[in-house]
Length: 103
Image 1 (cartoon, rainbow, N blue to C red):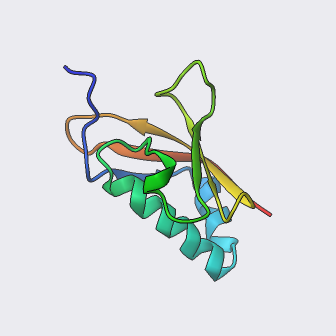
Image 2: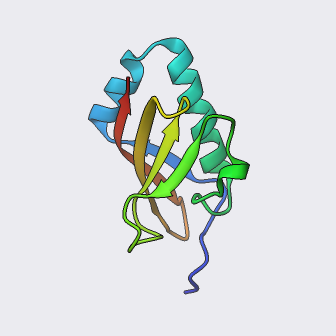
Image 3: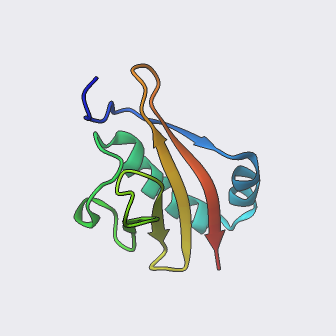
């Protein structure tokens, strides 16, 4: 197996608590999250450079020592963030959102 990412399309999977929190947010915030997730699930490599993300988004590894590990997607110009990991599989590769925060 190579070290290349499989995709697109990636499937987005949300931890139950994150999905419930996301659904409780105002509509404009949910739309912002959908816009960012749309970029991630259609990318060949979900760890996109910032110039490929919509305005107001910034992506960085959760730990600099694990560049292909969990990542943080900041959105709404830094007012919120979500933490995700990608699960590479031959069939049905996934992006799993583990944490979500918005203020």
